[in-house]
Length: 160
Image (cartoon, rainbow, N blue to C red):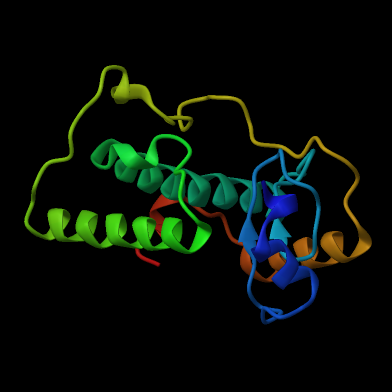
């Protein structure tokens, strides 16, 4: 999906500012603008980077899960033109936020209790597709050097 997306083209053609990045899991290729986890992180900054990466991804995935539970249209393929799909997703996000402000509980589905809960010892998210480019390795090195020198905990990222 990423390989065919317009957003990939924007990043590849450098239309997106250099300090903007996408967060990807181990299924995505190594790109300078796509942050993926270290394959075999060493103790210290690399391990802290992977922990922060995993925590951030979990927050995003929980949000997507909430939207899908509340709006069935988001469960599968939305058969509309891309311009309309983006409007549907934005409308769902706005309505979801209104529901949260008004404290309207989201619907539960069977098996939702454990959905996307990877924080208690699930498989580590490591990169498994291809070798990282020198650009990607340099970017990842800068990030872990300046951002993850200290130990990071999930609590330190919740209020960003």
